Amino acid sequence: MIKKKPMMKLLINLPFLLILASNHLSLHMVHGQTQDSCDSNSNFGSLSSQILFETSSLNCLAVWSSENFILRYSQAGPSLWSFVLSAPISNSYIGMGFSPNGAMVGSSAVVGWVASDGSGNMKKYLLGGQTPSQVLVDQGDLEILGNTSTILSDTSRIYMAFQLAIDEPRRQLVYSVGDNSNPPPNTPSFRLTQHRNHAAIRLNYASGEGSRIKAPYSNLKRAHGTLNMLGWGILLPIGAMVARYLKHMNPLWFYVHSGIQSLGFIFGLSGVIAGLVLDDRIDANVNKHKGLGITILAFGCLQVLAFLARPAVEAKTRTYWNWYHSSVGRLMIFFAIVNIFYGIHLAKAGSSWNAGYGVVLGILVISGLILEINMLRKK
Image 1: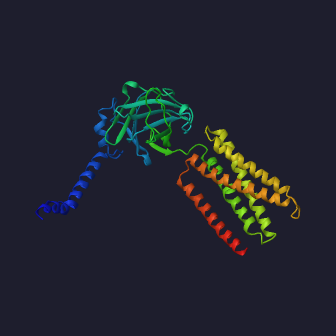
Image 2 (image 1 turned 180 degrees about the horizontal axis):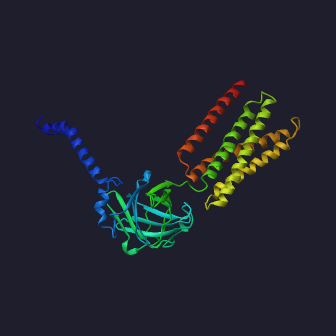
Image 3 (image 1 turned 135 degrees about the vertical axis):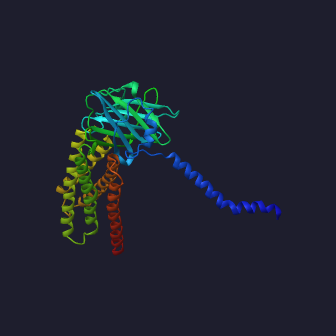
C-alpha cells in the first residue's frame, strides 16, 4: 500500500497539472499572435525603425479585412511613393499589384515572402496571364528602389516595404495571398504558384478611401452560370420527369414536357452564348468546361431535331426513337450537372452556389425516387 501512495497522489493532482499545462500553452499562443491595425500601431511601431525610409507620415488603410491586409502609404517626394503592406505570415507569399483596369491579368506586382531559412525576399512580376508560365519574374513597369526595399517579419505578420519612382501610382490595386500548401518562390526561376485568394480595390490616395472593385465581367459571369444552371440543370430534369411519370395525363403531359424542355433549351442556349462571349473577353484556361458545354449544346440540338422528326406513335421505328430520345436526354442531363459543378469550381463562386444548386438537385432526386416507387407499385 505504501508504494501505491505516490501513484495515487499523482492521479489526484493530474487535473490540476493539466490545467496548469493548458494555461501555459494558451499564454504562449496569445504571446505569439501579435496583431496589426490602423487603430493601434504599437506592433508596427516597434518594427518601423528597421524600415529604410521615413514611416512617420504614412497613411493607413485596412484594404482586405477577410485576410487582414493593412496598407500604409504616402508620397515621399515629387516622384516617389512609399508603401508598407502588412499581412499574416504564412508558408507562402503576399502580393500587391498595380492594375490598369482592376483585373489581375495585366498588372505589375510586388510579391514578398519569408523563405524556410527565415530570410525575407521580394520580387516584381508581370502578371501576363492566369497560368504560372505567364507570370514573369523581374518584368513589369514598376520602378522599385532596391536600396530602400525590405521584408520584415515578427512572430505572426510579414511587412513588405518598398518605394516606387512614379508620379502617381495606379489607383486600381490587386492583392493576393498564396496557398500554404505550395512553397513560396525559390531559386533559380522564382516561379509564382497559383494564389489562394485575391481582392481588388480602388484607392483614392488623397483621401485615403478605398472601394472594392468587382471582378471584370462579373455580371456576364453570373448570367452565364445562372442561365445554364436554370436551363440545362433544372428545367431539363423537370421536363424529363414529366415525360416519365405523368404519361397517364395524356395529352397534357406532352405539352407540358415540350414546353419545359423548349424553355430549358432557350435558357441553356443563351447561357452557352454568354459563355462564348465571356471566353472571348477574358484570358482563362477553361477548355474542359467549354468542351463539355459545347457537347451539351450539341445534344440539345439533336433533341430538337429528334422532336421535329419524331415518327408516328403506331410506327415500327417509334420504339427505337423512344430509346434514342430518352438515352440522349439522360446523357445530356448528366453532363450538364457535372459541368455546372465544375463551372462553379472554376469560377471560385463559393459554397453558396454549390449548396444552392445541391439543394435543388437533392429535391429533384428525392421527388424522382418517390415518383419512381409509386410507378413501380402501380405496375
